[in-house]
Length: 207
Image (cartoon, rainbow, N blue to C red; front, top):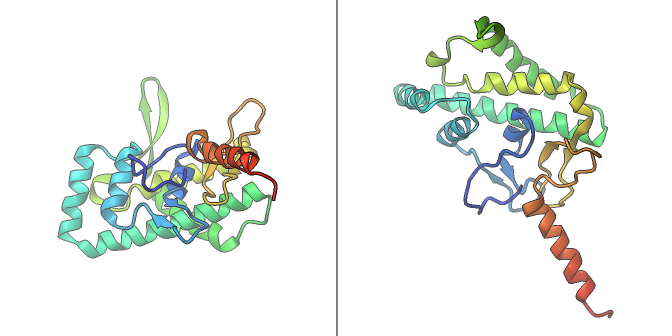
């Protein structure tokens, strides 16, 4: 939903964590393009809203950022590279176009970092993946994003990845509707705008 002026800075309409992160560029195809995570602080805020970091962990990250701002800046730059790679990969999937090997390598770099921190733990009678060392790393929020992208690429749901039909948006989402004909990232914004444009076009007298 490409609307940076909405009440909430972030939207989580993609149906997958990796797509929600790719969608942190508003109005991507237009001159009004706006980065919703332009600094490490906004990246932290997004990770908090996405449920990747607890309030206590966010406080810890801010402390680490204050102690070594260059590390935080580097983490933000890696996040931007990952976001753009994820967007290009899944936009290509949605358009049924070839996926860039360069973008896949960026994703693989992040997957290797995530794998190095992954551990299996038992929780309530089942085994789950968890990440170790998250308290000491300013870039730990990138690991679940990379894993989400890999899981979606390997999932049957990858065939239902779509790009919003609004020409000012280009946000990505997994179409989980019954007939798989969803066209908009969010009907309340992009869908309603399209409906309004069609309505006003019908009201114009013929020239």
